Amino acid sequence: MNLSTPLAAIVYAGLVGTLIALVVATATNKWSPRVFFLLALRLAIGWHFMFEGFHKIHSYYKGPTETSRPFSSEMYFKVAPGPLGEKMRKEFSDPGAEIAAKVKAPKDISPADFKKLKVEEQAAECPEAVAKQFDALEENARATAKAAAESELKAATAAEAKAVKDATDAEAKATKDAKIDEEKAAAKKTADAARTKAKTDGDKARAAAQKRIESFETGGAELIADAKAAYARWVYGVDPRSTQVKFITGDVFLTAPQRLDHLAWVRNQANVAEERQADGLGNGTGTDAKRVAEYRTSAITAEADLARDTNTFVAELKKDLNGGKTVEEPPVSSRGQFMDRFTMWFLVVVGAFLMCGLFTRVACVVAAGFLVMTYLAHPAFPWYPLPPNTEGNPVFINKNVIEALALLALACYPTGRWLGLDALVLRPLCKYKGEQPVA
Image (cartoon, rainbow, N blue to C red; front, side):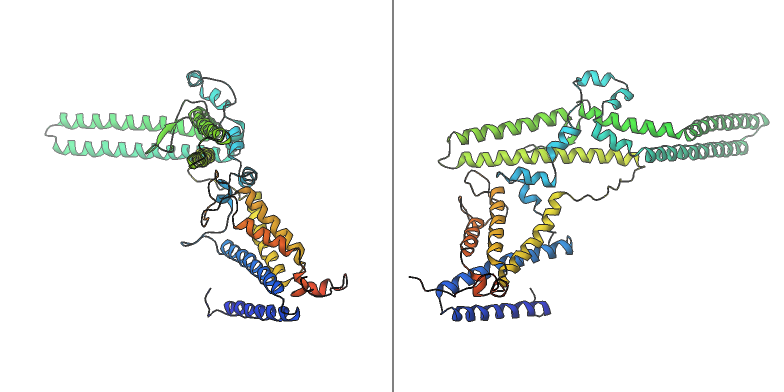
């Protein structure tokens, strides 16, 4: 924070005022060390919460820059292995549900048999979730088909004109070079034949293009059927697509069934490692714990990558149906994004309540509950990977646990009455006798 800005001056003035109020409150309570350190702890945690929230809000409204990006907890929960991890991931996206709806083949048909089907039959086997997206672009596909036919019509006319011009130029050159009338007549005959052929070819091409223009609705249906068939061929294992697989350098070409088999293998490796961990084998040096974390992360990443690649393929096919233009999808906020915005303001409000000493005990309990939920998403268990940006090497106990315990300890004392608005708000409800000496 730049010290020269008015906002910084206000913040530091408020901090100095808070420190003075801390000294006054301690003096009012007979210079009790307990009062001083409990109030200092409450103010420190409130400051931490409030400015962490302000930072997240600032990054969100500022938007992405070269040096920062808006706050999002998606990456934190993406690899969260705790009891709440999977639930929180689904609040942002549910790769498993997308894979089930878009990647798994609706019927049991072998790649060889599926390849023999007609395009219309292949299109009929396209997963419903994807087919609906293509059908929604029917008008766009019709316009694309019509534009393509109109382009063919113009190209046919241009090709005819060029062929006629070439024939005429060739005739002129041959006539100029001719020495006898027979050679001139032969040049004219050849040119006439070329011009006649150019006109015949042009008429055929224009007739075909005009027919497609007049029935462009059928052309749009054909484009949609082609898109559905192309996607279905990948789903049923006929046509592979380029992808990247961990531990393999460069791109590999895999079909949807092969991607699903790879995902199943990665999940099985994670399950085997977790079972071994549960049996207590290999825990002495932490080797197995690290392996479990790696396999679990690989399984989560492989699932997310498959869902992402699937949506990329669908977007490419939709782009073709839309005349080569990317289909603009309406922005839809997930519940996870809503929770991120709630979290930003939650941190500011709870931090402000702690700083001001308003409903202090309730604020302490609520803040502790938030920290417990964060811990349950990414607990500091030695067999789990460390959360992103973790400092040190916590084992079972991390700073979230410590801060939660501190908040619960603060909830046991009337610190809001020692320094805060609780002294005014709660005065009508119950009488406070002041700080009592420790026996």
